[in-house]
Length: 259
Image 1 (cartoon, one colour):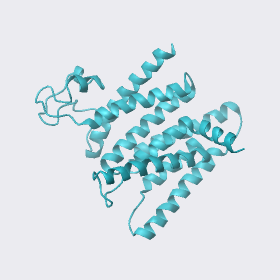
Image 2 (cartoon, one colour):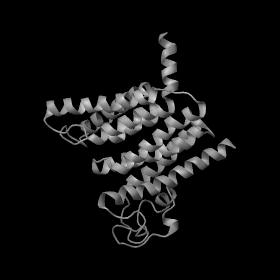
Image 3 (cartoon, helix red, strand yellow):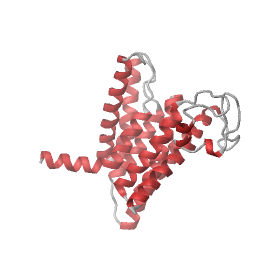
Image 4 (cartoon, rainbow, N blue to C red):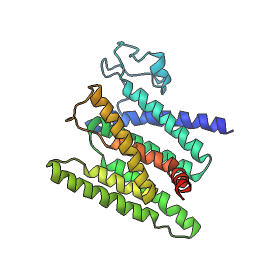
């Protein structure tokens, strides 16, 4: 049963990520995510349903349009694989539970936010509002059910928002430029509500280390230079995702090691 549900989770993630790819491709240009139907950006031929099967269609068509043979970018293929993998990881961590549903929503929103920021270096209000509403539900509903108050999320909200706002102000004073956007500040405030302050700090650690490794590597192999603008949200989103799934386990392991 779990194997079937795991496969279903991967397929569901890939399908939703495919739709997420449409959002990422169209929203920055003010286009509808419903019309027109999917089409080749080179020859404008409408794509058949069998050309839109997540992951498989790209492999079968060898990354080329069926009609004009122009190359299809790897970006959306990667998005679909990531969507499948993150949904699979959520299911493997939480199995059949309330946290799995919340995890699917959180993962989908973070994936879209990361993709949009990677493409445009901009965090869209609707994605932030969506993430906040899901995070608020994740924080409030268990407390109502269990009839208990847990201040962790509110502390995390304050730490995430005020901490990153302070970083933004200091960075601007030092560099005389907008080194950190307000979208990043709102994102981490929301992440604090979702994760609590301890897991929030862990998410920042994850995102910072992974981001530093990737960005330095890109500079070394000359894919970027030191002046290149950095999209922070993909790294922050990855840190939030990892902390949401494994934060409590990692913190418990660390405390057992030091105490």
